[in-house]
Length: 418
Image (cartoon, rainbow, N blue to C red; front, side, top):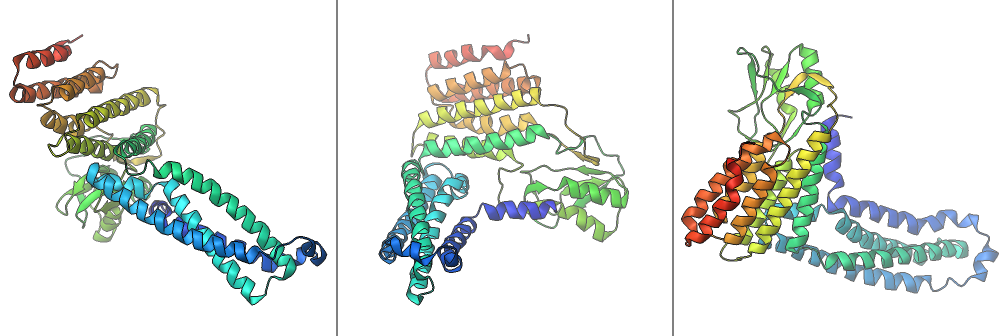
């Protein structure tokens, strides 16, 4: 299957309506199965079991599920709004695509449709005694499923929309993106090398963010045209029509050039799939909002710094432990993630916004020290540079000289060349 189609199916699978439609179809099928399977149960057996009350049970289930669904929708919308206002609007996507919330709401919709279809089928008399018995058994199973879902939903709804829960979801999404990228830092293509001086650039027609690069398609097109491809951009990069998406070892016709450009998916918003830096940006925005005078919550900023430290340490450990990447697309050259950009995404804005808060500035320096002292050379230079930059910001923002001196002592590690 084409990678773009796979990406589209993954995106559709994350939509709320898709899971609700699946559960709804299952509910309708469950309600109608009794009409088709009634011949499997003898009427004498069905007559011995009192199932005449199934209509009343379905009526109660239908009315209650409609109320629960309406309440759940209003709660989820309120949680999305709370996450956008208290954390960052970029984090609301994590709540919208949460599988637990979608499954709960879809279960309620499926139970509602099951009840409605069952009541309609009962009123037409298509079940008979045997069909009523099957419907009764299906109703009991549905009630058990709804009770279990409600118990899980009560626990989940108590945390939905909280800043701490939003941070945890952003951390999990970023860690997953990092794990996927560690396994294929070059997306199973050849490592980056400088293209020849006569390489021909390929530009894209759209303005937006690169969200996905179909390296397999680039390789197939490169084999077809007998060229080599150098991908100039990575996921998360903002591109305009005057920027080059890739370079080819020789010129190709306009139609083939457009096919090369189509391998780069450009959208209005970034996502977490191939872009772990986006997760770091989301976490940083939560910390920046917490540091704003309107909220004044340094504890959340400290929590974010600890979260970022865990993520970057995990990335370093993953890179060190990762096996050699399998080369599948030899004709395509892809840049690996530059760790300096990760530091720039997080520590550059936080150094500015936390300069006047001693407790946050201390945690920032300790985080940079922990990363700089890791046995991972790519971290050493950016950690020391951002520690120095944060000190300069704090030198102007902190009023007491003793506070400034304390930060200088904590950041003394940056001058250690060992």
